[in-house]
Length: 134
Ligand code: IDP
Ligand code: MG
Image: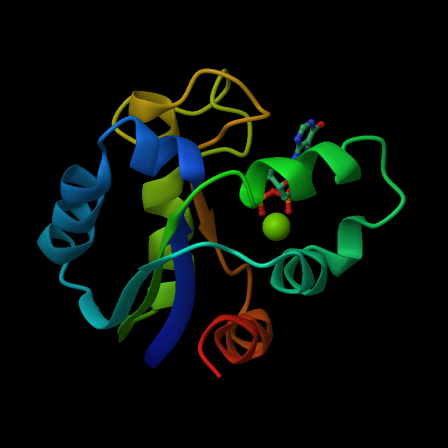
C-alpha cells in the first residue's frame, strides 16, 4: 500500500443531523489527514458528474435531488491506503446492513440517506476531486 488521496463527503443528512464533528474525528483517529475541507452545496452538474455510473437506474433522480438538497462537507483525505480505509470506516451502502461502529451503521437508517460518500478507487478519487475542487 502507499499514501493515497481520496474524496469523501458528508451528505446533506449527515450535516443536517449534526454528525460533522464525529465523522471527522473518526478519520483523524484512524490516522488520516484532512488535506482540504469545505462546506458547500453540490451543484446539479457536480451531482450528475459524480454519479454518472448510476444514470438511468431507478434511484438516480432521487439521488440527485437528495445530494443537492442542502450543504455537504467536501473533503480530500489522505494517508496509507486512504481509499479503502475510508470505505471501511463508512460501512455498507445500505445503513440497514452497515455494521455497528461504522459511520453508516451508527448515523444512518435508510439507503436513501446514507450519511457519507467515499471514492471507490484511486482513479475515482482523482476524478471526484476534480469535480468538487476545481
Ligand atoms: P456507495 O456510495 O457505497 O459507493 P453506490 O452503489 O455507488 O454506493 O451508490 C451510490 C449512492 O447511490 C449510494 O451511496 C446511495 O446514496 C445511492 N443509492 C444506491 N443504491 C440505491 C438504492 O437502491 N436506493 C436509493 N439510493 C441508492
Ligand atoms: Mg459508489
